[in-house]
Image (tube, rainbow, N blue to C red):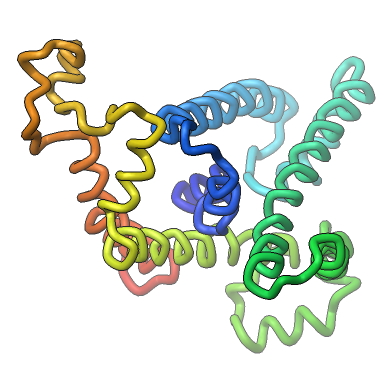
Length: 269
């Protein structure tokens, strides 16, 4: 669950970061930008949890997670709060903004691919794939509470997945995307960068805007001696870049694979 949430909230494994990264200037500090995104996203998630879960507990509800918490529990919680209509309206307005901006980033991935590789007109690609995404989202809106409106689809899914089918179609899509598709996408991206494209090419791109920050010796950096000439020799082994390369080539793919095998039940912890 934690792995799926990390991939989902940071838009990893779905091509969005790669697509947006292709629009960055060569002077952009990718290293600092990446750290800032991870830090701010984690901070906002913690603050949101500190704001939401105490209210849920105070009203006597089980906290839960995912779509069930968002669409079933929180509306009831807001309804019991003073000024709940205002807070519910404000909360779901910002949820709408978050969903809209996330949808735009996902639409840009497939649109950019067909514009660049198939020379499709951008307006046509946006209209076609935006419409397909809209149609694909209809079943989720029809099954927020249960499968009563999608009984035939539910029967087919039970035939395929057995009793492992989650509570609603939205839960199923959330489970498959967060726990299956995104981790696998991230694992294959790590393998591609580490073993096919090459970590050297990736680090060269990072160096362009970070002023060789990734080449700072890790111990010197942690000790506050980053700008000390005695610790900036031309030969470094234990640098941020080398550790990142080890993570991309070995640690990340293996860790994701182990977590994925645990999710699908092949191995148990």
